[in-house]
Length: 283
Image 1 (cartoon, helix red, strand yellow):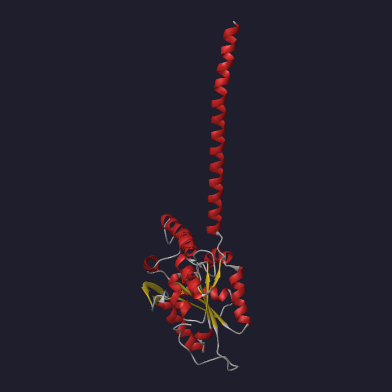
Image 2 (tube, helix red, strand yellow; image 1 turned 90 degrees about the vertical axis):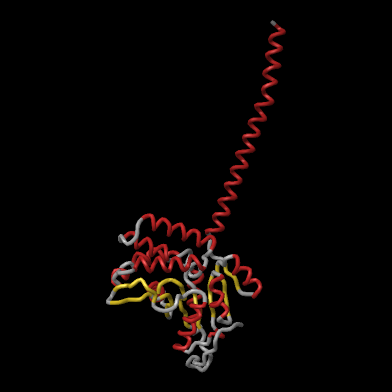
């Protein structure tokens, strides 16, 4: 266990109250939820096609390599600039488009785990660096107990582009966990956390039961050292490896065929010459 704080609230039956905290991107769902927000923003004229193309590329890179601190902070600043001056209502109206992209990419295995926690009397939360609006939306649709995301400042019904509170990333996620633990009487020392990224080590170490999902290389190594459970659900990397192997096999087969054809051509040439020579002597 870890440096997670202990809270005394407990459940109605007097037992410590546990919760399960699920990271969103690459953990609860395949890839990044942000790309579907970007697609919805493009379809409604909020961003350009070039910006959408870059976001799609970043999503692919994220699925294959994971994120970094610099990239996470860059995305946060860029989204802040994008929503500056936008009405809250206009962003809310993107919800159906965003959900249409996100919901089919949820891992059924992770939903089953989340609902098993609820059936055991444990609270379930989405814990993400994405927006509070995204966390609330998905938590509501999935019938989770709540969502914890990064908040943006709102003045007179419009986003200012500035953050409202801490960034829900690295140690920021632990702050959110501690806040909801205080409000709901949750004991983090008997709770669960699920994530894919080394950046979520503070979150994973704040609970007793850490589970890593589609881990990046650093987290995979640490999980092995810590003895944490590891789940592999993302199939994109494996599919690309299969395609690469098939491509290599096809290339080798083509090369072998070319060598055989050239070899056959080389052996045929002297035979033609010998036949010509025999015809010349017979004349």
